[in-house]
Structure formats: structure tokens, C-alpha cells
Image 1 (cartoon, rainbow, N blue to C red):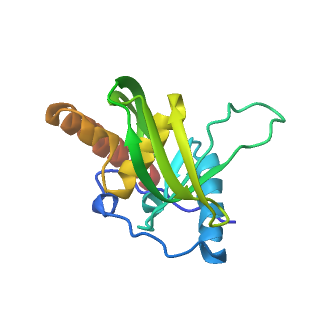
Image 2: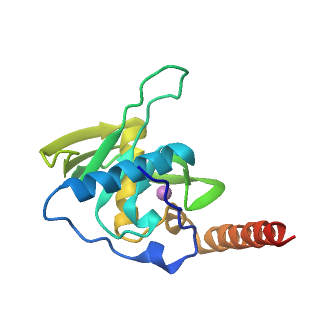
Amino acid sequence: MALRSIITAPDPRLKLVSEPLSEVGDEIRRLMDDMLETMYAAPGIGLAAVQIGVPKRVIVMDLAKEKEGEPHKPLFFVNPKLLWAADERVLCEEGCLSVPDLYEEVERPVRVRVSYLDYFGKAQEVEADGMLAVCLQHEMDHLEGTLFIDHLSRLKREMMLKKLIKARKAAEREEVE
Ligand code: NI
């Protein structure tokens, strides 16, 4: 396994629409292993392949509460497809490893049903609510080149992007000095 670097907004590579996979082989499992390690190290609870510069329809997630000695509960979604979404919507605060340290409430369907291929390429279906529903929709957005800040007003989004650019410039200056 290897750590990959996570791309942050407003990098145009985050706007790419990810390609579906024809099968889940060893190469994709290696990618998922790398993504998981990168996500745990960040730390984060979800990561799409496009966030490490690989525009393929692959998502890793782990919503288990971090506890000393508790085993990880990784989830893998390849080619996820939205089958159904509830009319009822809910506001939930979201963050993103590609939008570091910024959080904002986003409104989404409270419940979704999604089909996908798992780590071994087996077809699966899940009906999700709560955090899983929010996280799945957030990560599936990444596959379409959409960030959670794209759901906000233009004014809010531009303010957040300005903050990101400022923070990155400050970090770069620190590295030089
Ligand atoms: Ni994200």
C-alpha cells in the first residue's frame, strides 16, 4: 500500500467526470488499498479516486467511530449507481479532504438506494440513511466532478475558495522559509 497525495480545490482535475470500470481486478484492488490508507492517514471518512488524480468510478469509506483497538470497517463502492432517492431532504454539515478545514451545511435526500460492485467485483445493493446516505451522495458527486461547495450559493462558494487559496499560499510560504 502507498499513500497518495490528495488534490484540493480549485484544482480543475476535481471537475473531471470519472470513467466506469469494466471489472474489479487486482490493479483496482491495489488502488482501493492505497485510497483507504490515504483516507485513514488524512484522516477522513470517505475518498473518491478522482481526489488522488485517478478519474475512475471508485469510492472508499469508513464510517466506524475511531476507537482504540477497534477494527476498521472499510466500505468499497465501484461504479455506484443511484437507483432511488427519497423526496424528503435533510440538512447535514459536510466537509471534504479536497476542501480542507472548511465545513458547511448541504441539503440532500434523507435516504437513497444505490447499486455498486464491492471489493471483489460482486454486484451489491444498499439502502442507506443517516451518515451513510450523506457520505455516499457526497462521494458519488465527486464522480461527476461536483464538490459539496457546488451545492452552496455562489457567494458562499467563492468565499470558501478564497479561503482555500489563501491558506494554501500561507502554507507554501512556510515551506519556502
Ligand atoms: Ni469530498
